[in-house]
Image (cartoon, rainbow, N blue to C red; front, side, top):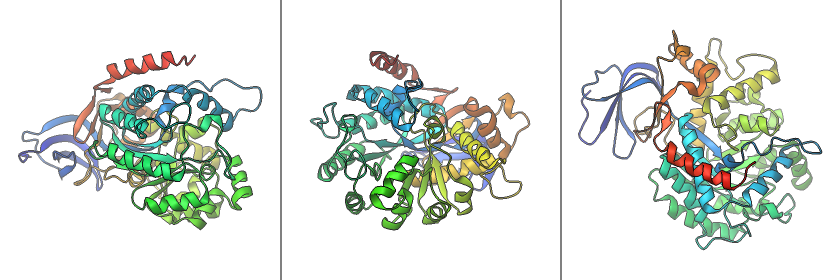
Length: 460
């Protein structure tokens, strides 16, 4: 393969393409980081050889980056039954101290770990907007700029999702002290979005959407208004994560959260419902047929005791899903997929649940569905080694002992259910290697800033 002037050319011994597995795959990348040409069965002919098995990088569709800094803080039993709601109080206490510098340092280290773990683009559900007193910074987009800075310094792709958060609970309840850093009325949120859009334009390939936090944090009127004002781009919202949330929603709005959204909003391909853990079979089937994506965060959902998603029914309805690292207690793309399947196995007391056809590889089913759902939810041309898509590529170590004798779809089964991130050797974003031999190019410097930050925050 002879590359045209201005193109970077790479050669992979084996690669997973939309058409399936292929050998001796040439990939040419333009200056904008997008793939120009993919040519299977070609001789290297001057291309840079990348050793290993090439896969599309996994989108991370749901992240609260700052929560990486509190991992481990909420693992002590309280005087009464611990739950999501008691965990939330720990989170509020932690974030009350955070400065913009802290947020950037924590986010950068989280993004390093994402890249090393197979995530190549992140959807940052960004609700930490203001200072500890709840006042906007002089630059209302200060915190958004820090997220963009962390993305730029690590070279991870970004969809920024500033969150609209106005109330402390259903019924337009007043915000609690722990929530004041999140809160904006609609008009100020519009100003925040305008500034955030300006900030994001400095980051090539970045996308901006909106994230009404939840039906408990915005009014029905606000949700309609925000969806109308921001008529383009992704819309993400937490929904039906907890049974208490479901009960409170019924009491306040007369319907379950997913039911209310299906009945009152035009759920389509722009929308991503985060968690959607507690749905009836009817809600599950309707959401599956809507064209929206469900954002599943199995490790966080397990950590918080949320419950188990209705995966089998959703899959039967051709529902679309992606995965996210959410609270970042463990940043690991294969582990999210593994936890998703294992939770379904425990629920159904069966094996290979998230597949539809006899003989289908569960690893491939999970991986390909999460690629497509994540790309849709983040509004980016990612998730495939194909022309027009950004060249975000994860390369596995073909010589790893756990891959001995493995080929084709078994590679994905070993990645998801056995070796995990131990297989990841090289990661490229926009056609440029950012992880080599399993380590991010800026890991040492970014890790040192992270250490200093969390040490000062006295995590212990």
